[in-house]
Length: 90
Image (cartoon, rainbow, N blue to C red; front, side, top):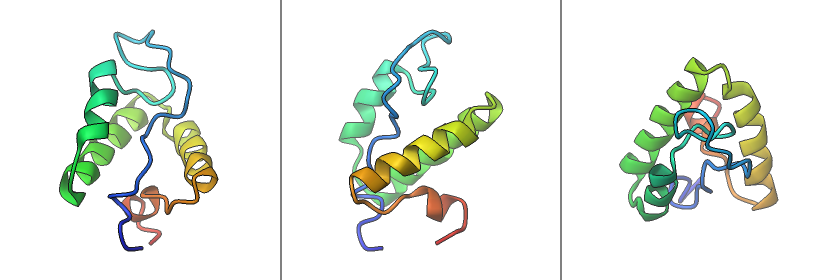
């Protein structure tokens, strides 16, 4: 799984409706966070971003839906899914 974090697709799942206090209803990111993700470099920074976002999604009760859609996105892009590492699967 070399380059897992470097090649990780954006956590965006293509819903992009910022109705929840500036957070997207699909991925829970804000507009500035979506832009910031594109500029993140290094495993530690990307991993921390995913950890924080996963916690936010879990608190909102949206993690299961988002994780399913994000895994689908990783498959379509033929990239390893970083959620496997976060969830202890890989």
